[in-house]
View 1 (tube, rainbow, N blue to C red):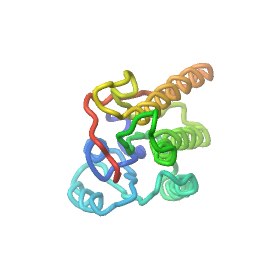
View 2: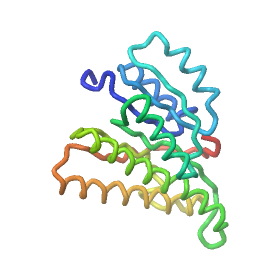
View 3: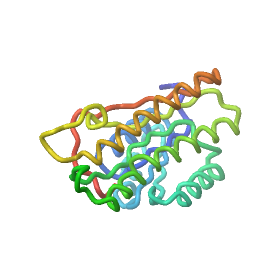
Length: 200
């Protein structure tokens, strides 16, 4: 991790759970971490608790369901820090509903955060790297076991479709970047156990 000391990481959904843990770990390894979420109160406390570590945490409020807010956040990061070197797309929401009768409105909201926000953040991260002629960087998308197999014992099927889409997007992006012979890397990290997350 030494070569990443001082570099900028963006972690979405960083106020609680896995996102908060990832943000803490990166700060302790010397990175400047922009943690974004709709609610930043917990991150403000985490920022104070991490003040003595090698890196630092910068909380930013952002509603990831709104593309214009994501774009505004990236512009702010560019002006303050230069750009994003690593992004961790962790934010997600879930609704326990099946495909046969699930709400289309809820599913659209789910896709806005679980898929389209991750797609937008990934694209803007690549643009940020390329604008600075940076030939490295990482895009890490937090996936789910529900994005690998359909679970029949509980109705999270519309959620599964979004996680399958995220996996396909990540794999497609990996092939595109490989063709460009860039060292920018994409990864899907699969959580073994899912919990409902609706307020990240």
